[in-house]
Length: 169
Image (cartoon, rainbow, N blue to C red):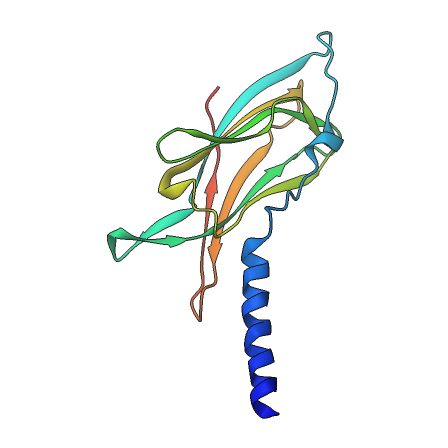
């Protein structure tokens, strides 16, 4: 009886691990529900920001990498104005486009934060992944803040660090 219980526990453990790793990527943000219509008559200021993101970092040497989970935080810092993202693109280390998250305007309400999560098992971005954000704000509205928080809590060791976007246009 003990052997059967042990075998069931081991099989359940394997099933649980495979179930977690095999799941489709879950989109935390429903971008379609955030679609906004911007009229040409709206007097919005336009900007573009660059954010470096690390799906992997080097460990011990250039031949060994360590995977990270990346949380991309998009923050509207205005207490009164809605802001708009017009495009969000994710590139890998070599500059190849991995994913376009949005290519139609999406809104963020005042003081709202939304996140994009790059799972730890998704190492496509590599050691030099990049995000480009095209955004629009009403006149005299503060610019949005874009940050990346990279983490890993493998075993008894924890690692985390932050990157901040730079305006490029």
